[in-house]
Image 1 (tube, helix red, strand yellow):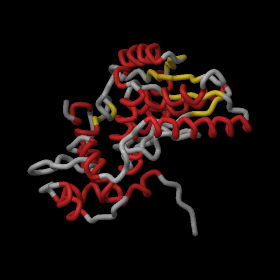
Image 2 (tube, rainbow, N blue to C red):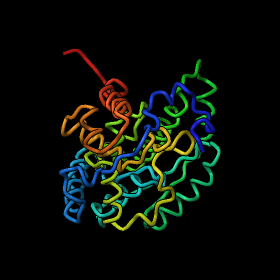
Image 3 (cartoon, rainbow, N blue to C red):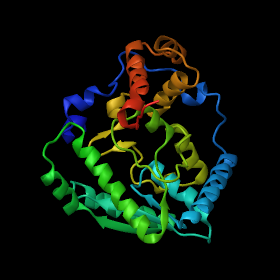
Length: 288
């Protein structure tokens, strides 16, 4: 299904690179990055990080942890990491919010099944009336209004559940999403276990953890608005290679295109443009 079928405006689509022209790259992230393959050592390091953060959170009365569970890659991987870090000392709560959109009921059922497979407590929040009230009360609507409203409402419910449980919230954002600055609200939290991992690495981490079979949707993005490969034009095995070369090796668009064997230098430049402007989209800026 194309993005336009879900009512995404042309203005929104123009903010993304779109599909490249010509031959696709012959090399991908795993072949270009100097980063070592994801291993059990990485799992141990992330679990140790979470244990340290959870212990620190207890100083402000936050003992347990809440994760928003969509059934997608990042949320499932974060849940498993939190389970490993928590052990029998603290509880992991997962939350899925039904905003009353087409398909939400089915996705919530699938998320509940995913939680059961993971062996984690799961709560379903009915947020349809809240979404309708916010939309009705809004004096206007812009091209990004609906997806940002949806993400903020889900975030609000996650933190309400966390407040009631005396828990912190674990972010499900990964490095690829942060670098691309998708111009939409992110699922933030007090801890961010995937914040230094590209999407490709998050998938490999899921394989090492043995949780890929639990995913209810293995295609990154948001079914209600767009899938990432629709608006980026390629999958993350290519996107992550481009992001790595732009941000770590600091190559220009032409050098990146040459390095990965891509004909469309202009497409790489559009990706670079998004990355360069990312701090302006959702960052908080002050003087000095």
